[in-house]
Image (tube, rainbow, N blue to C red; front, side, top):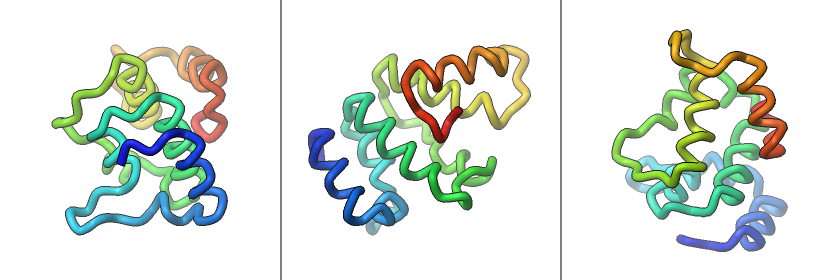
Length: 112
């Protein structure tokens, strides 16, 4: 809960599967980080680790991340909007090149 980047990184190094664990209400560490407005660096680390699992790289899995009650920081909202744009055909989405450029800029290699 509110762990700094170094602590989250150390945990994921020794137990990467932790990113897929769920608490009693069905929330993953990523959901918990959203609820606690974790820094973007923590969100990217969790999301990159989560996306490193092939089974999480599909529309159904990505959709599980869409929860309306999050009050996200602007930079985290941008992360979500670019991720979700990969899986829908909304005319308002950024272009594929803009999406890739964004993921490269924030060094989120599993997004790019």
